Image (cartoon, rainbow, N blue to C red; front, side, top):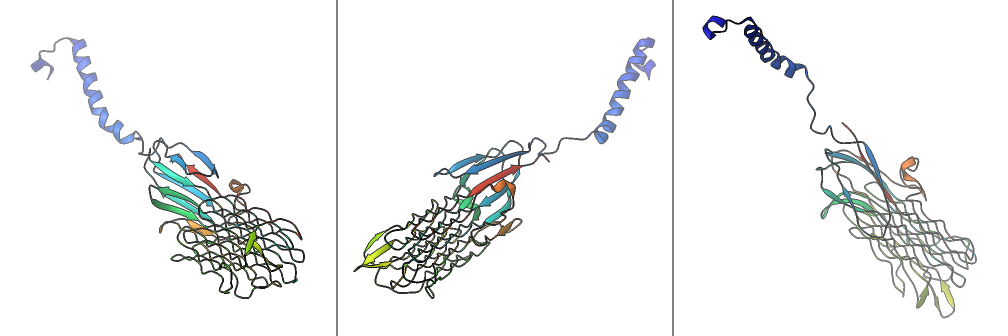
Length: 342
């Protein structure tokens, strides 16, 4: 070969042999050298997003094609106490754990629900606590995952020892009903995967409670004229707590607002007679993608997945007011997003 090329010089022959050896080695190197994978630039990171009163943005980092979200809904507010019975407690928020398929560089919209506001003691009776707001991750107008919120507790009264109803916790795919307290059939029902929860079924001369709806809890009932003391619904759909009121000198307590969610819980009835306390609002339902993820309902004032250190105090239901005392507001929700190097 070298003669045909005219390569008579020994150094030239060695150089050509070297080039040939390199060319032969390249395929072997390609087979044994590890090539970078498509998401190798996704760096492990944790982003915690708390309630701000407005939508927030999360930009997916470079190289990340899956992120994991932990989502807690807001807790319901506690009802104000009366002179004889304490106010009802608010329900804890629901919890969603969800892996989310994403595109690097895209912007997701984050909605962190406010806790339901407290009901206040007025003359002799209590206004009701409000429902908490839902927490969610959106892509544009499309919800990727939603955690339901707890319902508000009913107001205490001045004539009976039966007590006020508690707000229902935020749910898994179905929320939890509020409780009646001293009002039979007065509680707000839970939101479901396909519909808002029904309002308490008592019919009175005042403003009756309303049913839950998509992304919104129903308002609690107010059963007479001059009103005061009900909590304002938590931002992102919480239902308002029913006010305490005075009709002809008769004091009546308000019904708890429904918690927001994929579908919100219904509002509870306010007292229809002076000898009754207000009923609790229902908890909202949660939503997650069809593939992967889990949902956990709250229990009492405790939110779902309460033992997770990432939660902090998010999603706690507010306590009912002591005798002649105000209730406490529910805790706002929280969203924690994780990326992982893969």
